[in-house]
Image (cartoon, rainbow, N blue to C red):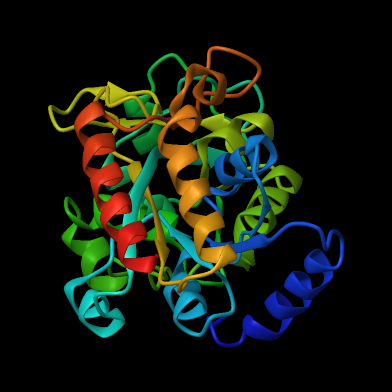
Length: 317
């Protein structure tokens, strides 16, 4: 679904949200579904004044929603391109907020520590490996009992940053995948079934034995799916983690905004400032009840983000 096609339902959601409390300003956010659990957690914990509503509409249309004024801020798990920055102009701020892990998840009950190299991923997601009992998977997973069930690829019907991260990773090592599917928000896999949004992908994966797809790590784990270890830069297999341990599918989560002066601009700046301060604490990222699917910025990243926010806030006032 295009960003513009999402504007009508998004506007309806915002209108409903705005009617709940007229006493304080509301910052309206939308964008990447990878970041939704984290941003929603932040929105709930944010002390105000004012409050934040966030809707996971997908990374693809976040910039358009911001430019059209449908939302006050957008969230993406890919940085703005040079062309997008030039189009948006100097009034737009882009801030890193956190790191999130993308997982290759499969409905394979009883199978843990599944290992998949990039040739296997290419074969699975192009429909060239039809069953999980295939000898090519068994060779990479000696001693594991893999079920003799069909592989069903579940992928996004709408563009997503998670699929961009995944497809770029596979395409970098597989010329066949690069030629057939390409690398981007909506690679041309040509097999399997499409589902809308991260929630749709998770639901399809949970309901079909043998299904495989790409999800935010926390959602994959909370859904009871098998999560694959992937090849790091040195060729060793690494379990999913956002903590910079060599796991290859870690995305930086960015916020973007060009809201002008006034109460909502002040609220957006306050929310970002809080997210870059208290929001980076262990209470957000663990240990604790939350699955460690997200990780904080490094000190240097946080310092750079705070400086960019201060400059932007000064220009807005």
